[in-house]
Image 1: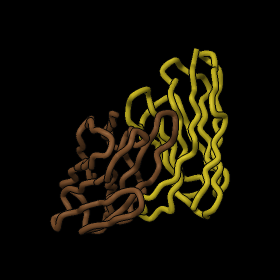
Image 2 (image 1 turned 90 degrees about the horizontal axis):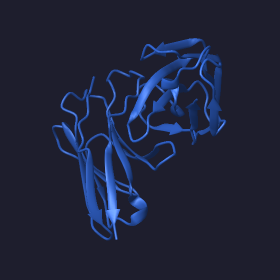
Image 3 (image 1 turned 30 degrees about the vertical axis):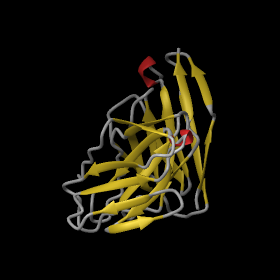
Amino acid sequence: LAKTTQPISMDSYEGQEVNITCSHNNIATNDYITWYQQFPSQGPRFIIQGYKTKVTNEVASLFIPADRKSSTLSLPRVSLSDTAVYYCLAPLGGGYNKLIFGAGTRLAVHP
Amino acid sequence: SQTIHQWPATLVQPVGSPLSLECTVEGTSNPNLYWYRQAAGRGLQLLFYSVGIGQISSEVPQNLSASRPQDRQFILSSKKLLLSDSGFYLCASSRGSGNTEAFFGQGTRLTVV
């Protein structure tokens, strides 16, 4: 199982860039890395997904080094509304269907 | 994208009463379906997942069961609720085959009293 490890919590201020790193040392060759955002009393929401190098969308960027043992979610210029829990997900390889979430990183953005 | 319908949004049930939570999916066929539970301030605990009709995998021994009577319907049940069954229950769907982009319902907050 590609177990993931993230910081439990992070603090930031409005307008700053936030980088959340996830380690997944045992990730399988074919696995994608996926990040989710969850607000209180809501289901998680897909943010971004990548396999290697860099992926960018309108919400975030995802950096994945060549060894793929870690990944970094980058949130540019955060606002108070970015306060949420962020989950990194790297499932079993070989087309396995089980999606297990780790504890996530609780990001608090301050004025 | 997929839409997950999950109801009710909140539920208060007495200890020992039965439970049935239903989840239906739109916008895809033959999805993988999941039930998660989340305690206050904690992460998501995978309870059950299903890769097809009638195929249920249980992750955690507990007082709950799941069924998938139709391709896009997933039901979470209990014959007798315990206080420890309280929590936030989430249904999710993905395209399967290792695809990790999942879509979640709005959740049901269950309080067992």
